[in-house]
Length: 373
Image (cartoon, rainbow, N blue to C red; front, side, top):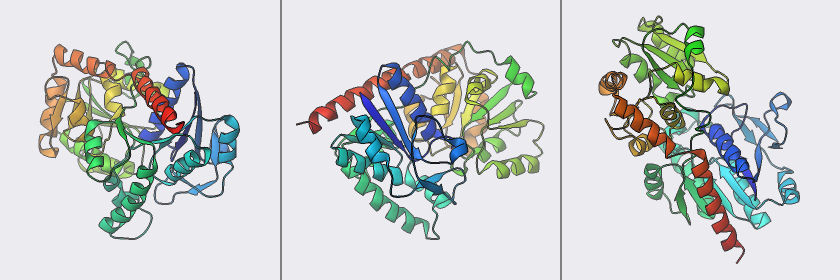
């Protein structure tokens, strides 16, 4: 099968959508299928061989992102390649392109819904407008796109329920991205990573893009009186403010900011840690949490959305409601039993990239038979 992954963000951008595209592409290719990525052009210095690029301009409201512009030669390239399915990732301009590609090529078009609009519009909407008004207009556009897709994929049951309360696509399937368990597993040695960053004693990890909606400030405040170091892996627009907060709280000696690290080192970051924490209410899937669980780590997460679906409090991890009980959840997680750790690993093994790819392929085949009628 030949599949076109049409995405709003791709390398050098670093976010969950890019990770999801990479994982899905790799898993499908392992099963013998061809995957072509169609993405906004980030400029010559960042181009990757084999990617079909669409002319774009920088997105001023969010550094590191690019907005595609019309016209484009991508459609002709996809037609020549004989693509069987269009799989769009994201809800911005490339989602519209994905829908149009499917219609023009008369092949199925599906979309993975990665982001709930209300979580990010106040931070990144490019026009000066009341947040509620902006969200209303964006949802009009998104509803129009989703209703024209042959299927919409959501990564977790909570997001499916939330999405269906807001719109009514033709078909909605819950298929998580899946975790690369060959890359993330309990046998990794984290000693070199600990030495590189001067980590001693217990280590609590936070891994992912440093964006405002992830509430990493809550984690920093909660760690103040806990006898452990906080390892913050990643970079993003919230980074400067988080470093300033760390300084204000006098926590420079216990909070380590690594900045961006190469993907090959992320598994070592988990191995160097004793647990992972996330205070985000924004996650539609929580890829870093599943990666940490695949490495055998216990996790403490805000009881919201995908985390509510993945974690049973005290069974395979720990949940908290907000800043007031985040510290308690971290303490419980640091003292997690071997049973909790085993259950954490088993949860990750139930959500592998291979299993997710099989479900995607079944959906593609089903839609191809429908469109072919």
